[in-house]
Image 1 (tube, rainbow, N blue to C red):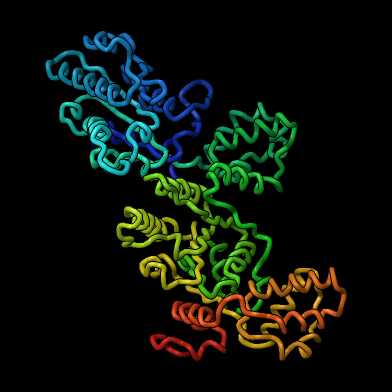
Image 2: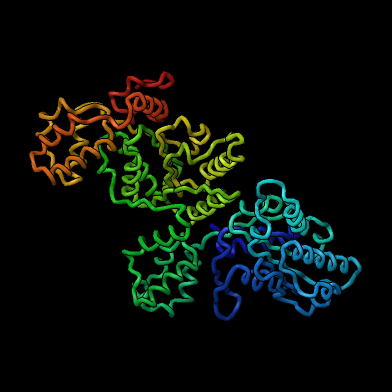
Length: 556
C-alpha cells in the first residue's frame, strides 16, 4: 500500500522528469491528509496538500470546481497581467467556458515562453473532475466530448508540454471520469489509497490532546489503534473520536472491531457487509476431509506460508446445502474479516464500475480478509454479455478477473465464490490462479446423516433430540436433506414444543411424515451433478456420490 509520500513522490518524479504534465488522481481523494511542511503537522484536504506541498514553489495555482468556478489560489498579481483577463469580466463557472478560459491562458503563457519572455510555473487542479467531464452518457454528446478534449490537450499540445505546467484532475473513481481523460495515454493515473497505519499514527499524535477521554484506553499503545483503524478514512476515524469525546465515552479495544465494521459499511454506502464470525469449523457437520483441508489452509495463512495459499475457493452445491454457513465457519476459524460483497450494480452509466473500484480500495486497506460473493453466477458478469446491458456485464467480468488474479493479493485477499450453478460462472474465473479449490457441498445420503443434521439443528433451536431417537425415526428420514430444509423441520419442532407439548420423537415423526422436499428432485439431482463436475479434489466428495465421478477424474 502506498503511503502519502509514495504517491506524492511518484507525481513529483514524473513531472520533474518531463514524462507527463497531467495527473488523474483517483481513489481516496475526499479524505484529510497530514501536512508535515510546517513547524507543526496539520491536516488538510487533498487539494490543499497539492497546493502547499507539490505546488509549493509554483508561481500561479488555479483551481476549478462546479460550485465555485475558477479560483486563483496563488499568484493573483501574475494572473492579472494576462491581457485577456479583463475581457472575461469575472471568472466563469460553467464547465465549457471555464475550460476554454484555462486553455486560453495556458497557451498565452506558452507563447510568451516561445518569445523569450518571462516564464511562470503554473499549476491547475480540477476538483471532482468526474462531475465536470463525466463518463459518456447514452448517445453522443458533442459538447461533453469537446470539453474532455480541451482538458486532454493540456497534456498533448507540444507547446504546453514544453512549458512548466502541471494539471491535476481529481475523481473518486476512474470509471466515473470521461474515457477521453481516464484513458489518456499521456496522463498518469495515480491511485490515492486509504490511509496506512503510519498515516493514522501521525494523525493520532496530532489530535490526541483533543481526545483525552476517547483515547484513554490507548494512551500507551496508539500504534495498535492505528493498525485497527485501517480500512477507514482519516475523516471517518476522526469523526468517530470527536463523537466519542463529546459523549465522554472511551473507545475500548474489545468494541473497536464492531465500531470499525459499522463505520466501514456506512462509508461504503451498503456495498459491503461484514460476516459475523460466530462459528468455527467445529460447528460444521460432516465433510471431515474438507474441514481438514480448510484448517490446513488457515494454519498456512497464520504461518505466513502464502505460496501454498489458494487465491480463492468455489463453493457449489444445491440450494439450501449451507454454503453461506460454511463461509461463516471459515470466518470464525480463521479469525480474519470476511467481507460480503452486496449488490454493487447501479442503473447509472459508470456507477457500477465506480462501486467496484470503491470496494477494491477497501479490500486492499483491510489487509488480510476473505471476500465472499454469493450467487456468483449472477454477480461476476459475463465475458460476452451481448447488447442487452450495453456491455456492463463484460466490464464487470473484466474488473473482477483482473482483481482476482492479481498476484499482489496472494496471502492478503482470499476469494470465496458460492453458487448453486457453477456451470454459469465464466470458466476463466474458475481457473487456477483465481479459484484454486472447488468444494462441492452436498445433501445427506443416509438416514444416519439425515438424523445427525436434524439433531444438530433441533438442539440449536432449543429442542433437545437424543441419540436414541434415531431408531424410531430411521424409516421416516429421507435422503437428500439439506440444512435449509432441516432448518424448517427444526423450527416446526420448536413451534410444536411451545404450542402442543408432546415427546420430541412423536413431534419429529409427525413432521417427517408430512415432509415434502422444498426443491424438485430433478433440480436437486442436476445441481448435485454439476457440483460434482466442478470439484478439485475427489476426497471432498462423500462415498455415496463417488459413483458419479466424472470420467475425466482419476479414481483413487
